[in-house]
Image (cartoon, rainbow, N blue to C red; front, side, top):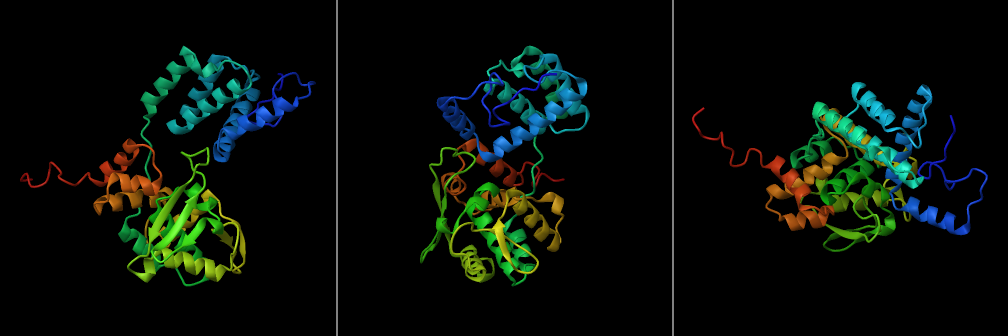
Length: 326
């Protein structure tokens, strides 16, 4: 079986294996790769490698792939217990690989579409949401954090993550240069985000809290002061000896949140990095903050997305079962 070069996966230009890319081809390739975020490209590469392995085991061509093989592949994923969201991303990865290589995507055929529709009906497509970290949960978590260098990092990460309503990727991409303190609080410069791939950026303001123990601004000041960081990555790894290392990753944030939740007596399986963002949205809504103010803080572009969080928060508000005599 012939091995093909895929632009999403490798750096070579698709074409004759003996050909030399022109300057224009190389520059175009560079910008095509930049059209997707680093996390998206990483996910696509992982997905594509999995499909390649599946094809190699069956000695079938991965590109251009036969629609029947793609249908069999996603059916196998469903039978193995993969989530619908994962299978959907695998389909997107196969499609991207074909399009970037100049082939028509097999995922657009009626056969693959019908298989995917059947999988969706069988598995359901509603994502399993992590629990929102309410203000009460945030306070309980803060009480378990010690006054050590690692604790200062964790407290600042927890409170800034909650108060800014930021994604994990946004938190770990912050540099010290993106932080601006004032008499009112702190201003964060979010340079790029999931919904801002062109890097227009946005500014997020966080005011001083009423309680020093849970004040995000004071906690961030304390972390910066104690860590001695003056430039570069804001949130960094800290080893067991108290040495400050390199930039935290998004997965690192999720692990830290789960660890603190467990220490506070909560089930870590119910929480992840996104719990801070969900918790902020629901807390702000319950405190009568407008949808516009919430979206300005979180960077959401869709009012429908925000309202899905709010609907979850309002499930027991003006509930039809309240006071009906049961």
